[in-house]
Length: 200
Image 1 (cartoon, rainbow, N blue to C red):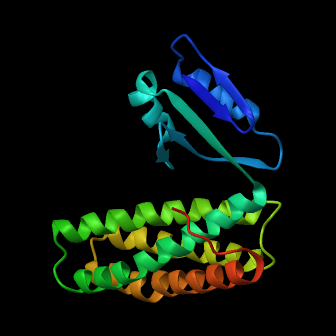
Image 2 (cartoon, rainbow, N blue to C red):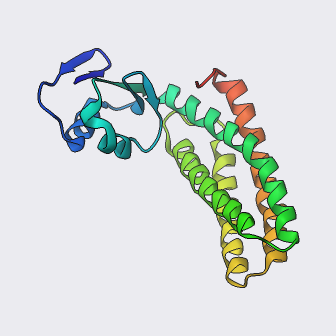
């Protein structure tokens, strides 16, 4: 297998363990640089890297590791978060209506997806707030992250009570405005301090 990390081209004759590959990638990350994704025989892999390697490592002939500067990485984080919110907000509106009726199994499935999305968004906001390349309005992100945590706590109590009207109200009046504000903030930050480019 050929492992490409930046300018390094390392040819391995013997089979590698997943841990060895990950260790090699981590060794290559100097301060101010982040692992973005890898390209395995032409296929871009953006998440669940370890799982992908565990399933496919023996068949991969060329593994190219994409490393970005902190500024490039932050740019991608902001673009991804904005894109997620643009897709999520209409779904969240639908979810509000679904909880106002009798919630079905599908409603709860969408609710679980919302919780997963919020966890991802929370992780993104942590990155934004702790990065050296954080945007000038990062305090606003920090505040919105705190507000989202507070609404999530209320949501947990409503779920425990199985009160679908309360769940609907918290999503509509608590979470949705935060999502809309975050989408606006991400857009303004990208347009004023970063660049828009196609992630694909």
